[in-house]
Length: 324
Image 1 (cartoon, rainbow, N blue to C red):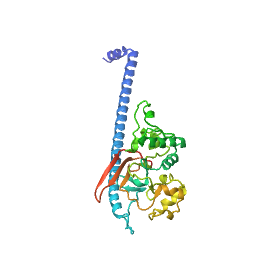
Image 2: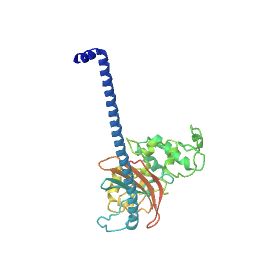
Image 3: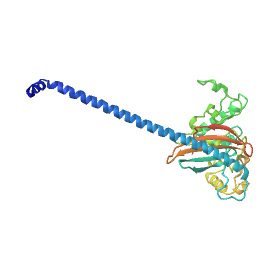
Image 4: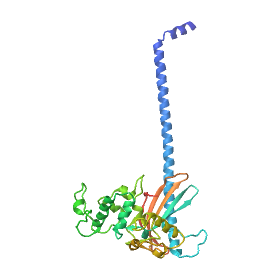
């Protein structure tokens, strides 16, 4: 019997044994590839789920920051004239000062900026506008084009400024449209103006944009130096970087009630006002961050305080870009 079995196996060609081995190896290879693919897909799905969860958490943190800011604005309106500060009950500043709020699962950074500390694109000075653009990195020649085109965009006539543009220019574009010949309603409308670009308005990875320093809500030609951030202060003729820092340091502890408090140069006086800002409209920027994460989700809202416990949201952008 043993001899018959031995004879049977000895009759199987060696070549067929080799083919069978190769087939087995290929099957094992395919199974390994499939297993690795499933493992990679599962891991990718897990990471995607974690990233999505963190994004949602950051969004909720940012939205919670907006609500916290609204509460602080009510408190600010009620107690902004207080002479004695109670510990833990400080009135938040409305000059874009960052406030960090820590929670168990993350944090949010909140900034409140009074609209009277910004440059109004409908009522503001052309000189201040140009300085703001140039200080942000725009070439002077392009800044002239942008400012003149902004003026042409909102004036009621069809007359061109030296570097401006009217409907005849815009109608010659691949996607034609007419100049508005009326005031700007939103800051995003600036993207329709000759010379303006998303990089100038919103900024990029290398430099900040100007959107945080512009408004359509103050309706004032002059800027309140008690609310203006450093970038806006330095756009005012006569205010040097050193003087801007002096202003910011001084107003940390007291309201600047007169130009004499900081020895403002004469050329600055036509562009600024002093005293407690009387605006009821504020931009709130809130960035939520997961624990140990640098990025975050940003929400920006323009809030109008209409009473002791009433407010209106004039605009709400989620997600929003941020310069900070």
